[in-house]
Structures are given as structure tokens and as C-alpha cells.
Image 1 (cartoon, one colour):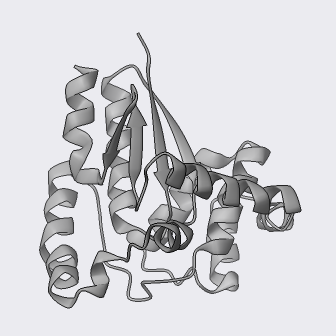
Image 2: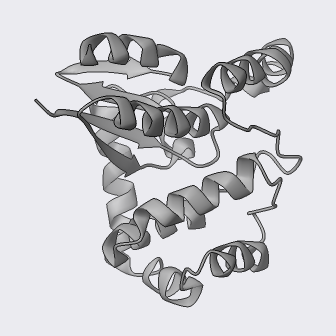
Length: 195
């Protein structure tokens, strides 16, 4: 029987990148449907009073230098810390909504995540974003024209508010079978349910 997982993400979170990669692996192993739901992490932080763990120097250093590389090794996925981190992901997240509507969500997500977390691209610069998207055959003009549509902008706001209403306070956040899980390091609990 197919299990459905809601995956709330923001490209600016390296832990959401690891979750994205691990979820791809889990989908190959189990009958799992992943609903990737773009949200704006800054909006979630503002609504919940939370902040990025990297704002705490000791925690940020540990997370970036030890914890994330450990999980990347465990999942056997590439991870390179982006020297431009953090960036404003508003346009990228609106682009994710536009990509859904254009039927290219999977390729868009793969392109943006890889550019940020393996290729060290500065996706805070629109020219770089366009270059990365076009290199993968995506129509950057169509994507970013649609990303400026009022309905697309509102959908990102709605997704973000919905995530907070459901209990999210950061990214990645998952919901499956009525339960919430926060952080890519909780995917083992999801795998237990899949088993």
C-alpha cells in the first residue's frame, strides 16, 4: 500500500537538501509518494520565533563541519558547503511553485538543489540562476515570468502559513500518517513506518 509523505522544504536549508536526496532513495526502496511542498523558511521562522541553527556560532560550526558531512556520508550523497550561504530564496521558492504548474518540478528541484549544495553556485544572483536552469534544459524565462504571477506568490504564502498551522517551525518538516517529523535526521522513523 502506498504511503504518502508531505515534505515541506526551502532550498536554503542544507538539511532539507539532505532530506530531498534521502527521500529519493527511500522512494526507490518503498512504495512511497512524496509531496514536495515549497515554503519560505524565513516566513516560518518569523511566525514561530525560530532562527537558523547557524546563528549560534558553536552549533553552526558543529552542524556545518561535522553533522551534515556525517549524514552526507551515511546517505552516500555529495554535499559541499556553499560559500554564499545564506541567500534569499524567495525567487527560488516562487520558482518551485511555477515549476509545479509547468510540470517540471522534479528537474527544477534537482537543478536548484545541486547548484546550491554540490556546485557552490550563488543562486542569490539571478544571472547565475538562469544559467543553471538553462544548462539543464529548463525554460528560465517561462519559469520566472510565471513566478511573478499573483497566484504563484499567494500559493507560497499559503504553503508557508499551512506549514506553520500544521506545527512546522523549520525545514525540512515531514508529515506522514498524521505524525510530524522535523529534520532530515528523523527520516529513520519514517523508514520504520515504511517497513
